[in-house]
Structures are given as C-alpha cells and as structure tokens.
Image (tube, rainbow, N blue to C red):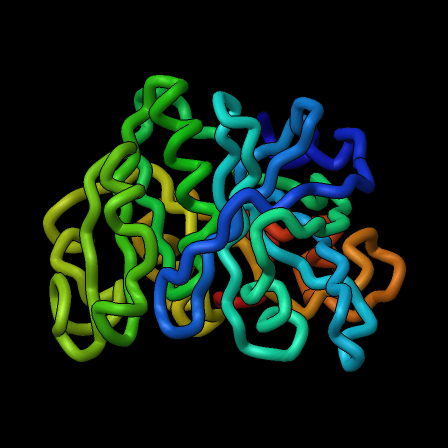
Length: 265
C-alpha cells in the first residue's frame, strides 16, 4: 500500500497485555503484546504511542516502531531502546502487565514490486520497522536484502530473525561482526545494483544512505525518528523541513521519500 494511503487507516486506543519480555542486549528489550481480540490492521513503517505508567517523570506517551505483527499468535512486537526513564520503564515491563497503546499511527513504507531488487538498511534500534517490512515483502513475492549496522556485535539486533526473510549483511564499527565500518562502507554497495532502498536508524546514517541512493539514481525512503509526542500532528514538536515546507513526522511520515527531504542540499 502506498504511504499516502496509510494515514486513512482507523486508529485505536487499546489495552494490550505483555505476553513476554526478552533482553536483546544490555539496553534493548523485545516486548510481545497480545489481546483477547484480533489486532487491528498495521503496516510496516507505522508506529505505536505507548502510555508509560508508574514513571512519575514521564508525562507523554512514547512512540515505538512496529517491529513485527504475528497474526498466527495475535502478537504485536515492540523493540524498545532503554535510554530514558520512560523507555526504561517499558523495557522493564512484566509479563501479564497491561500497556495502553494508540495504533497504528503514521504512514508506512511503499511496498516494492516483485521485480525490484530492494535493500533494507538499518542501524541500532532503527532496524525495528525493517523486520516487519521484510516479512511482508517476502509474503508478497519480493525477497529483500538486509544491511544491518551497529557499533559492536551486541548492537546488531534480531539478525537471526531477519535471516528468515532474506539475505542478511552486517557491518560493525569495531569489526566484531561482519565487515568493519559503517553501513555505507559495505562492499555490497559497490558490487551490486539495487532498485530501491528503505532505511531507518540514526540520522547521520540515513543521510549518508540517502546521498548514496541519490547519487546512484536509486529510489529511497527513510523512516525518520524525530522527537514525537502526540503522534497525531497536533503538538508540532516533530516538524521536519521539507521541499513542501514544514511537515509533522508523526502524521506526514515517519516514512518519507528522500526527494521530499532537504538532506541533499
């Protein structure tokens, strides 16, 4: 489904039960949430606003990318980076507890055609939306290639899960896993040609990926991670300057075609 259509999807405020919590690293946790009713339709690239209870310093919901939707188990997966009071509280959630969520929010990635060779590039916790995207691509007959990066081996998240849906390539800054360097240094970018690139992660990484795509005439979409509070475009704290003026990342994104962004200037 093109990104422009996803903002018309119905949004829900629902309580979801924490089914399990797994530590993926010293600061990343995978939460699997479920409900006694079928989960709403959600698309790769969209996100959830989660209310944080029992954290006196956290007043606003926290935006978390949709990591995966398991329809067979009726599970929503959220990959949480515990970097502040709010996200640390979420990462410490116990099975059986309840999280109040607003979902699905934002616009997702454009689904490639079967004939397009597509590279999904993620860094750190930015890999989160790419797992669900890769799964949906494969289900539609388009096998993705994943390029995952991190500072060290422990920071490359869910590599084994990505391997279920396509080829996985890795870079680490310290060379402890895969090729040494940044994702834009990986040899695949000089040895193979891709028709489309989808990326999510730290902004410097996404800017470098966008510039590579632009220089090589490759269609590219980036999922931005600006600070988002309301998730509905009302508070204006996530504004991004674009060729169309200031746009709210939570409502008009978080996925943007790089041609809309001012990163190339």
